[in-house]
Image (cartoon, helix red, strand yellow):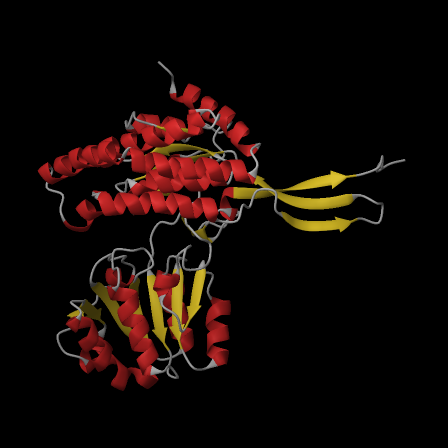
Length: 416
C-alpha cells in the first residue's frame, strides 16, 4: 500500500509531465475531465446522496447541508465550470519582463507552474473539481484532502477526473485524493517540504488556523472576512443603502459579506433609521452602539466581540463614528484584511480610505460582494489570500504560477 509520501512523489512526477504540455493539450485534458463528470453523473450523485443522508443523520441542516448537496443541475454547473477554466488564457509561459542589459544579456521573467499544491477543504464537493481544474490548467499537480462529510462525493468526482487524465497520457496521480482522513495524515501532508510547494486551506477559521499553525510548507490563507462598509458624510444615501443591503443579504454566509457598517455622524440622523428599517425588513438582526440605538428602534446592544465577529448570517454590527479617521481606526482594529468598502462622493476621502487600509480588496462605491475572482475578471477562483506572499486577494490562475528569470547570453562572464 502506498504511503502518503509515495502518493505525493507520484503527484510530483505527474506534475512534471503536465508542466511540459502545451496549452492546447492541457485545455483538451480539461475538456475531457468535464466530459468525464457528465459521463459519471449517476455514480457521483449516488455517492453524494450517501454523504447527504449521513449528514442528515448527524443532524446537519441549513447552509451546511446545502453546501454538501449536489443535484443534476449543480453537477452540470460543476462540469461547465471546468470547461470555463479550459477556455481561460494560459498563464504558463507568459513573459512579464523582457529587456536587454548593457552587457548584452537578454533577461526575461516568465511564469511557470508552482509544482505540487495541497488543497485542504471542507464540505463543498464542487471544490474537488474546481481545484483540480485550476491547478492542472496552470500545469500543477494537486493533492486534495477534503472533509469526511463529503468523502463519497469527493471520491466519485476524483475517480472520474483521474480516468480522463490517464486517458490523455498523463499520470493520473497528477490529481491525488487523500482518503485517509485522520488528522495525523493531514499533519504529515503539511510536513512534506521537499515535495509540496504550497498548501491552500479552504473552510472554517478553525481548519485554516490548524493548517497555518502546523504546516512547514508555505500556506496561503485567510482566517475570516470581517468586512466593513463606511458610509461617509458625503455619501449618496441611495447608493450606500444598496451597498449595505447587497453586501449583507445577498449571501450572508460568504466571506465577502458585510459584517459591520460604520456611519458618519454627519449623515447618521437620516441614514441610520432607513438602513435599520431596510435591514430588518430583509430579516437582518442589527446590533448597534448607543448612538445607533438612539436613532432606530429594536436594535440589539452591540458588544465588543460583535465588532470582531464574522457572523456569516443575517446579523450585522453597526456604529456611528465622528470622522473618517475614527472609521479607519475601527477597521484597523477589527478588520481581517479581506474587503473594505467606502460609500462617498468625496474623492479625497476615497483616496485616504484606499491608502490607509491594507486590505486585500478595497472598494469605493461598490458592493463587497464583488470581492470574488470571477467578478474581478480572473475567470475562476481557488481561494482568497490575506497572506502577503506571492498572491493577495482573490486567487486565479496566475496565483498558481510563479515568475522565474530566463537569461540568454552569448558567452558573457561577470569577471573576465
